[in-house]
Structures are given as C-alpha cells and as structure tokens.
Length: 389
Image (cartoon, rainbow, N blue to C red; front, side, top):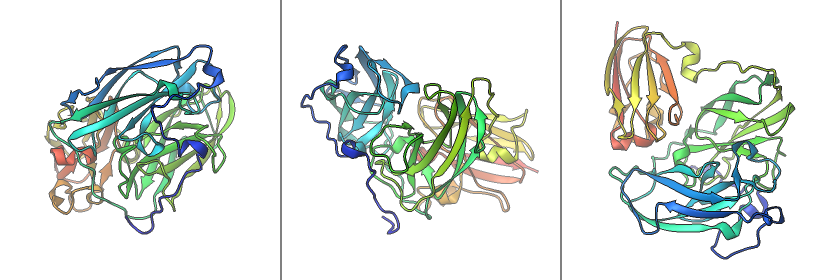
C-alpha cells in the first residue's frame, strides 16, 4: 500500500469494534414491543451460487424498512438490514438496505466457500443482535472478477457539482460530485482495501468526528445519487461527503466536501448531468449501448460521426462503468489496449452506474476509442467507438 495512505480508524464508538457473533443479546427497549425477526429465504445455507453476483432474499417481520430514516434518531419499529461477507465487523459490511431483496456484488470474491451474515438494525445502524442469521455458500461464478490492481495516484478529493452550496432544494434531490485520485465503486464495499478505490460516506448534520454511525445516510459508489431528506424536515442542513476505503475507514489525507442546503417542499431540483456531459449535453441522435448481465457492451463496436453522442444504459442488475482513461485501467500493464484515445481527445469515466442509470458522452474528435468497464474489464467487458470525421 502507498505509504501516504493511512488506514485510520473512524470514531464509530463501540460499533467499529462490534463483532456480530451469533450469541443472542437483548433487543433495544425501543423494539421490545414488537420483536422484529429475520429469516434468509435465499441463498440457502450450503447452496452453490452459479452467478457473478449473489442475489439475496430475506423475510422481515415486525420492522418497517425505511430508506428515508437512514441515520435518523431511532424510532420503534423502524430500521434496516445490514449485510456482511466473510466476517461480521464494519470492515466486512457490504451495505445497509431498506428492501428485503438485494444483490451483493461478487467482485473481489474468489470461487469457493464464503459466509454471509445478515442482521436487522435500527436507523442509526445499531444491530439487533438476536436477529442475526448466517449462511455459507459455495460461490462458483461463470466469470470471477478479482480485485482491481492498486491505482493510487495521489490524495483523494471530491468536488461538488450539484447542488450549489447554499441552494434551496426539495426534500429529495440529486447530488453530483467529481472525484480526483479515486475510483468509487459500491461493488467493493466490505472487501479488501485496494489503494485508489473505495466509495463515499454521506453524512447529514453530523459532527466532524462522529462517535457513532448516527447521521450516516448513504454509502454510494457512484458520483451521482439521490439524497432524500424528507425525514429530516424543512430548513437548513449540512451535508458532508467523504472518500472511504473498501473497509469503510477514511483515506488520510483526503479532501471531503461539505455544503449546506435549505430544504423546502416548494423547491424544484435543478437538472444535473454527468461530469463529461456537463460540457457537451446529450444529443438527440445519440446511439444507445446496453450494459448487460452477461458483462458485455451491446453493441460492442459502434461507428458514429463527429458531434454525435453515445448513451450507455445499464440494462442489467449489476453496476457497471463506461471508462476510457488509461490511468483507471486496472490491468493497464498487461492490457493497455483496453484504453485508447485519439490525440487531443479527453478521457471519460461515468463512475459506477447502478441498474437503469445512464451516461451520455458527445464525441468531438475523430478516431478510434477503446473503452472498458472498470469492475468487469477482466471479464471481457470492453468496447470500441469509431468516430468518423
């Protein structure tokens, strides 16, 4: 690991050191009235998973799973699901969820036996220990996706694109950032740290050094996401976005971004675009490329004219990127041909696109472009764009 990356502890109080053993512990008093329960529907204990990612279905009783309540003070009967892979501390936390069906990315998992642990939690992400369920699976993906190669190019930083600091926004509004020296991807959350990779921690009205997970509302792996403050009420709120490593420790040094918004039910959100599209908006005659569950761009080869755009649409259940940047090619040493740009052309990176998200880029320089999906480049998810002058 680069000497400048310090694997610092987050002051998360007892939570950071919490081991989710299967030993029962008392449920918090706020939940004693309705004793929530959790059952694993799939994958079953001992099951073989023959897919690139792990589809999870749980059955939750007596707990309202509420996305808008993430990070808010605990309320009786309201909470979420925590999922862990090959461990049960914060370092192995895949994410927190407000639906009983979700996907855990298989990126970085070797074929073979792996343990999944699930537990219900309050809105401040405090586990209800007597709801823990654990299963062991035999992970046999058709195309395993190893951890990317380290790509630490400097101290990570974040620049806010939208909304503007001090803006008045509706209760739910889009946020767009641009990262530097950092590749965000939710597929690696809870996995082994890889210098240069990670995700974001989004805090609302939190102290600079939080003593718990309270006020943590999202852990996205994309540069664009929706922030729902409907449960936080109207008025001014302070948002802080920090770059985190795969195990949820902070990069240090790093440059987070902090801004304020005023939430108003009468406000309308300002439209935002992806970073590459900010300078050149989407074209009406854009060619569409699908990003598929088979880890392919379809069509793989596209020919367009100068000034025409390509729109990539994630039509799969997996997160993908469209990237043409040699510095972000995780296998650049062995396969530099995966990232090729004509002279004077600018590199692009969509950031991680979740299912149904899209990204548009307008091509102004003729030539041949070779591009790839960062998490799935080793699975052959590459494509070419030929731009005719």
